[in-house]
Image (cartoon, rainbow, N blue to C red):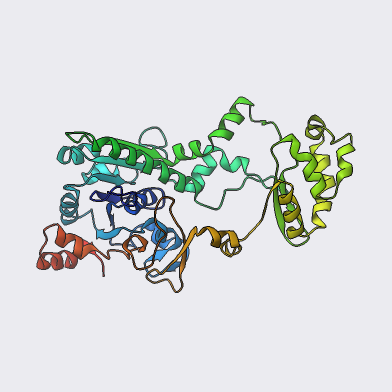
Length: 398
């Protein structure tokens, strides 16, 4: 064992779809586990494969969530599919499922059934709203939970005051990391056990959204929905050639900020001279600052603000971000070749692990059912039996 393969030798059966469950299982695979992704052979497989623009068997959503896994296309509605899954479960360390609550039990693979055969298994369920309660059976995705947990309400447009969702899959990704930490710590404890004891774990996007927004959640509760405004003019400002985010948290930032933008007369203006005065007259302060900042270029402002210790960041597109010199200097992005994608894909490297390299298993996003034949052969099926399963459409793949 080494730091790059902490879970080497462990077997993970991943029946989840979308982003939250697959990203959790992907992290286990990146740390050395053999992750077998089980997905339906019908309708494109895991639905993340068909979200947005597609590239043969992939979309941007599935490229990330399938990295380093082996894909087996399996129809769990057939007796043959169920029998195959039971063979896969034998000797598994982790079982992950993301069906709507109650569905996996109807397939016959609930925790009680699986743990009866594999008592040491770590069984993880991921859902939208949780396994119990009045909303448990409802379908859900990241935007729905952003709305429910209060994130959308707080993310209001500066000019229209309309609530907006955040475009990235932030709850999905964060919940995936929560699942990874829960499973990883469980596996750490289980290593020390003479008799391996499994456990049932569950998380929901609702829980992930609450934890993601916990600071604002507490603040709004304690302040009854009217959180105290900062006394500093933090904002995304229009500049002469773009936009710039300026963020200040300490009262002592006021003087160097005014000096950086050549507005030292504001230091003596009674409306803004003190911390308390700025808090009282913040809207008026914005009216003073916006035209000043809009008259300067982004580079001029950023250079002077940075020199004075004021946090700031140019508002980039994703393409502009990838071209930033700081990104290249830190090596946080690898560029990977993936099946069906016409150009290399930017992939953030995972802290604590080597950079991704095209052509390696951990950097490969498998096509739907790419490993069906190999995995079935490993689990005792003959070539003739595998051909028969393909003919019956109980399995799928190239």
